[in-house]
Image (cartoon, rainbow, N blue to C red; front, side):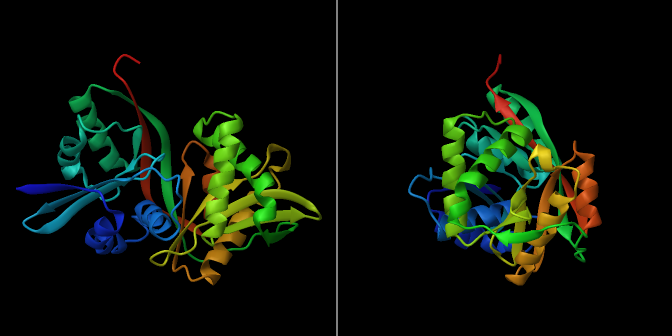
Length: 287
């Protein structure tokens, strides 16, 4: 008989689940990075996380978490445990969506829709990559590590990335959210690399400071007027190099499978596919 626990304390949750997630820091890149940020670089504006663990005969078999405003992440929920987790949450919480390995996500979406009556649509098809041998592309320009003086530029680029990649609405609030996220990220020691050609900034990539030996790159953004010159590949490679120099054994990133260009670019600089993932959005019945 499975025992499902809802946790109120993130440190307590991580004490129980940390070894479970850290056993594969590539596969569990999202929960590891999310917990590391919340435990070590908390923001007073953070909303409480949603934390669930599942044990059977005293052995942890599944764990899921959501750190608002992000979706519930399911790398720790194998498909056979999707119904159990959905049962534990249905009728008690509202979920904007879920992400994780495709098989787990699809199993949970079916279970959630059956219990809540909500609708679900696939928002993004993703592929997780891990860096093998890094190949630095021969592209004009040089990388520079960003500082707080770059927040205005990067917050604008972060908003534009969100509008283009995730259907985010462009407004004053989105710029404010981007500034806040960047301040937290820079204070946490994450690496933000800007590629310059002469005095002109032309591309940007960010990577988490290593946690559990893992660093994840994202976002990567090149303004439209500077595309098709290799700057995105160059700044991503520079960011990956930064991550390794700062102790990352595993450097990973996600790509949008609807963008074949980015998938081929990352493979050319040394990234190799790990697993396909998906993100689904939930909407109320009738929408």
